[in-house]
Image (cartoon, rainbow, N blue to C red; front, side, top):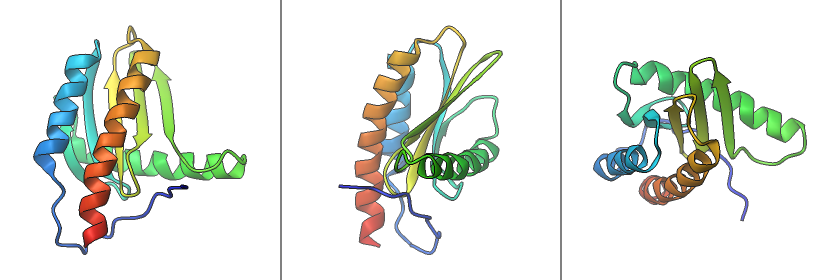
Length: 141
């Protein structure tokens, strides 16, 4: 079953299960050493839940939406199908964005000593759980 990311227009009155999504973010922090923050946003850049001390969640969510657009176009242009994840590495760590269903994305920030394999494993699992929560709630509206 091919999933495509869809824009969330904000016109729906349904509220995403923020407490459950927040619990996923806390669980990731507990399971991934050196994780410094995370957020879940809609594909058009609205914050659903975050665990980002010291960062503006709204700004990171907007940048996530922009990166998502570029990543999705790149995977399609190169014949690699729909967007799944994007990893950037800076001098002081990693920023990773994962597809979390049709309407949401998961973005994580981690220090330079992070085990990237562990980051991917845990984030993909959490992304699937977040996708189930968000897609079920938003497909109803």
